[in-house]
Image (tube, rainbow, N blue to C red; front, side):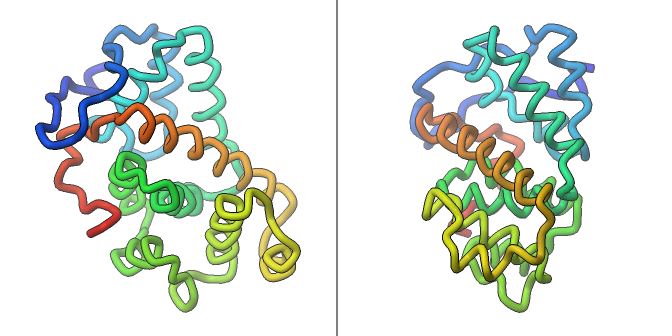
Length: 204
């Protein structure tokens, strides 16, 4: 199973040095590997496995296992589709200027139907005419949650009817998870794995 999930990676010569060295993810216990194998799609497995950020989070093994279970369970049990989740996650990469998040989720976004026009719309926050009402609402409220730290009355009025109560709760869960990932990647200067070096970044 471990060979399917990850492979060893060298360090990118031009990125800032990692502030915390990732622990070897090959040392993950079987329960953690079993949790990770449940992630939907192929994008975060194999060459796309986020070994560097997970290796950093592993420095606290007491919290790592419960976090993995929460993260993967959310991906599987949210009312949001995988495509909808990927749109929100990609936008979070833009909002937090995290190429690590962006580059890991471009292949997964493609797997679940995100087009090049949609990738550019996510970079530019140009949702009108590109996404339908539901996806537009998810993205606009993602921007609102990050920029305003809440959902203000006007944004609520504009987009509330496109989403269910469960969708709104799930959206806050998802945004919160990727605040954590983006801040971890940015603050610890986590390096993008070599298999993703050629994936177009946020500034492409």
